[in-house]
Image (cartoon, helix red, strand yellow):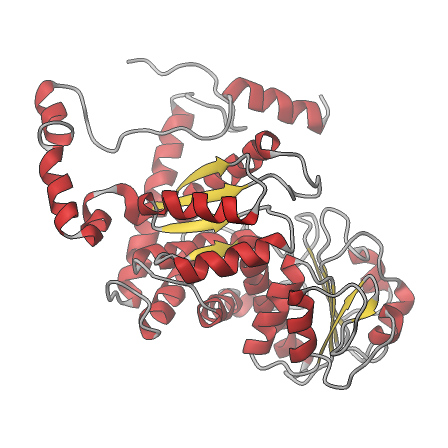
Length: 436
């Protein structure tokens, strides 16, 4: 059976990847009266008197909404909300497995910015955070900006912010190995959500020699052709030398290339034209701007891609479970670039003594990954949130580390028991119903 048919078969058997289960027993009338009516009325009254008590008495403190309109799903494009469901279910399952977080996929038949914003605001009381996912640009930028201003819970856009945190983590470690500095020339190919997020975070970290390139060439202040408000922001903050040339010209003498565009956009000649010890992040997925092998053969010092079968995989899984876990632990009101910077620096530190040209980021398959990287990122995010005055409660680093590890281990134990009882197979599909 080929991979596509196997995926279809597994999803058909399991009828999706997630389900909702109670956390409390409801096996007799006493338990029903305590956890539902009449006992639950006292909980509602307590929350009515003090709305933030919802974090203590309900699932809000660990609940995230994953919002998608299906207009930019993976590399598939605009496939609609129904076709987005399996992807958002997968995201939900990853949130649980690697962050101990309960995430609800909400795929909506609404394309207008105002409609999406209104819907998210209306459902926000049930959630401790919102994750915007696979919404086309430039619409996603405006939706994120509005919701961040108008809600009192954090709104996270993984395509922008998660990608940026992982890339910066990898760049920090690449600089250590190459001896390059924050004044290194960086060329970013792609001005969509990922390119915009990466550019913003690099600027916050102090990188001051960035040129962003799109299909029309370099983005610079005063360019008239094919500009958006986001490109104008990037033009104001980058390319201080007012370079106006092509990608090929921009690559000449560059120290770092970051591609978030499409397959085959750069060549071996581009790598050859870069400065000594070139650093190449070719992140178009599943087919990068240049293959790992070609980039290395052309003389790249470090190469990172989005592929799991190559060294230095840039995978948002390194970021979003830990970032959102840290936000929930502090009952955060917002997320900022400083928060993301803390996450990126912790991702970089998490590599530890294993740091090498082919190991600039934590490896997802490494032993103990689940209970090391995400809890550390969560603790760093929590600390930054508290320091910025964006938390509803004050929690310390060790408290967050312990809580995050406990939440993740709890699910891992449940997963192991379910596999042992053959509730589902190791491949993820349901095998037979459990016995009552």
